[in-house]
Length: 565
Image (tube, rainbow, N blue to C red; front, side, top):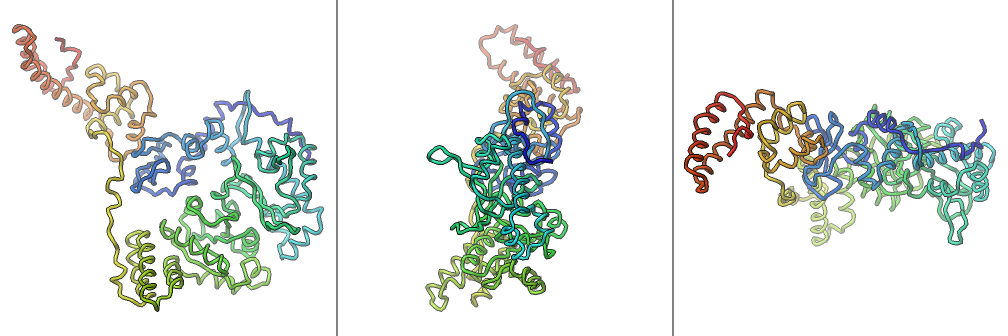
């Protein structure tokens, strides 16, 4: 099949509602949000620190049963599409297309235009062209073969080649791809003089996929004298290098099975490690490990092995990553390769036994950090030692309490000092961190949650009471009656496991109790009312005392609409 596919033949329009519904039923909100946040199981739900407002105590809840999220701190919430809209700052159609692209779910269109599928098709088309170029360029093939990359690895990682910038522009035009669309996909850029130029030229090409196997960009290794040895695609709607790990799409199954992930520094390290059987290897994309990588690394709860170069830059990167991982509850260790060697070189040289021993003999994250802190000071100088211990304590206080306690003793051993120097400092981190909240009323929360789950009872309840009975929950009650379950209070109740759902009998008892409170209060008001005539006041007081309250005591719901002044 020819690579020269008419782009103009791909006509994309407004997304059909049936496609949106199919997307909603095909994706899981926990999986979607866990690409951005580290979620922790909490009963039937999951919790995390809210990404939309600063907090130290998790109040962000995700319900897999309801397929919604809700933050009890700032009130934001909704479904998976709403989350992607908020976290990525996208409009509704763009969020749908991003999720559809991420999870390989086809969309149907009616009239209008689309963005993500356009860009994805551009990337797919260029990927095929790059692969074809590699087979026709002997110098590029020789480079890969000289690095001992086998043909099966070239095919598995879909490695390609791009030549001159003019050939890229010519291919885009020949394929009838609008150049602005190629800009959106990160393939070309617009120069200061208004002319287009290719971002990647004269380079070995490494396609980059997201965790679900959709192509999102490219990396390129120069074969010329370009000062930048490696270049990645720019930030686009699909490509965010801080949330991607090279090779993860191929490694994730083994990561889940083996409960281990090897994090390296480059494309070739990943390719060669996989070639040698270390199929849980991934790499950051020319950037240090960041907090944005943590959600993807957390999937499957693997042990993380940081496999970095042993030079100064590698040690610094390993130290930063080890601090980040250990502070966020990851288990793992650090492997520093001897200077002048890296995983790719060791595989190419056949040093597989030594490589295996290195990967199995790493130092645990916390001891590695503590030792690195120690070596950065002259601990023979008491003032320097004091600073080193203070920095170590600061690091230990970032760990979970039980982990901190375990490594405090290790810190004392490393520094050759008393364990008392590494006692935990208790700080009131949670005080005053939460914003003022509305007055909670457990009884009305239970009533509203029951009505959410049994909407047919709403009319029965509104036949005997009005919205004002719900007091601070009145607005939520009105929204519930109107069918708007997106109200923050109602959404929160749906994910709050501590709020019970009442039986019909329990609901009736609760409403009767509310009516008793109402009529007793009304009785006091009547007795104090000086504007009523004696006969009218006597009639109303007698009606409440001898008719309404006894009927309520017998379990009859006597509605406020029966009582008229």
